[in-house]
Image (cartoon, helix red, strand yellow):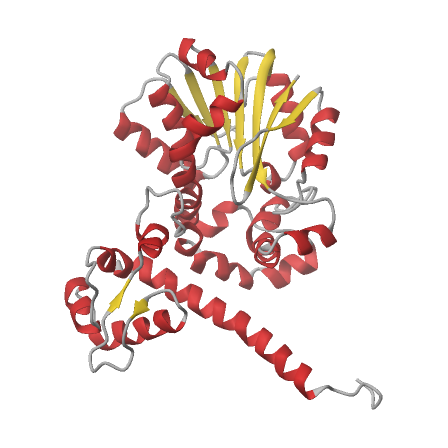
Length: 364
């Protein structure tokens, strides 16, 4: 800074406020993680008349002083409601909307997945200086088993509620094919929720889930054993490769192509695996073609670019030759171009309403 670079005092205050509001958000995100992990939200959701800090501490078997300070953060952040902050023993409660987002795992708006894995995500900061120097990121298993659980909790609520009634009908004839019996691959299956849902709904179809995360596969196989399905299996494609003999009727990839080190190669693999009459359901983060559009059109762009550094792009750069798409790296036009290069000729954006993802039906 030179003498000619005069500082505007009002602009300085506003910039400082903006910077520290980011820190407030980060710290409050940590408090949301604690609320979920300690069962505080679940306990509050079951007490519609509200809780004092003392009653909540008793019901959760936690120390009242710590619970009280946590509640103060939550009400200050406008997450928890309180009718009378001046009362000697304030009563705190969750709104119906807060209960849906914070304490109802099967609700499509449930949002605790990323908060569940927040410690693991933020711990990646310790790896970032080396990644920035070498260019080499860390794969998803670097986030440990809780990272896999967090991904499961992030995406399954919506998928479990809407995949069958809202997504499949947009793909003409697919439901009938699955009912009659189809060969299906769920690539990037994670903890297996989507594969298991398809297996339960369409018992005549054979579903194979593929993932390279050992933590996710352990969870998927445990759930499979619990459900007792005989038409679903899970594999690591490095051990049991995806068959590229044109035998699959349907392949789906949910929120994983942008994380892959070699997405171009994967698209070629998908084309080789599909029958000429088959179709691929590509689901990935809504993204635009330029930084300008992402920043101006997506109010969550800063969050998504940050998550990309700590997780998605890190995974996509976890090999020396990783392509590094990142969270906002697969726009519709880029996906279409890559699919065409891989040998597909039909690319259609589906009319599916989702706050984060775009849905595409791709055919040979």
